[in-house]
Image (cartoon, rainbow, N blue to C red; front, side, top):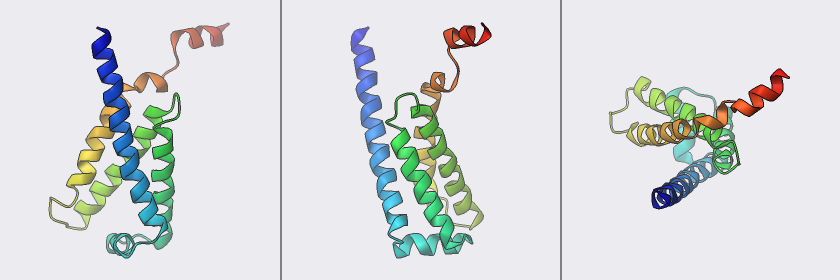
Length: 132
């Protein structure tokens, strides 16, 4: 039983590490106003300032993936951003392969948020203390 728990913990750390790297790079590209990013936001019809907001939210989500008790919140935030990315690609009429990376990230982030959902709910002892 301990082996399964250790494997899950290692898998969680590795997955969060990979996702953190992806979103740190993505946020950095937005803050650097890489032409590819700026052109994409313009093509979707978003103002340039929105690119910086998305970059800041990606950075925040990546940090929250490592904050004790906030992993589900970070994964949820990033998942919402990926919903926006998938929707933007689809509404822009992009080929179906264009939103695929964002969709895969959405699935992974949703899995983390679901697995860590207990962080978002008050524990029974906290609820009892609040009642007293």
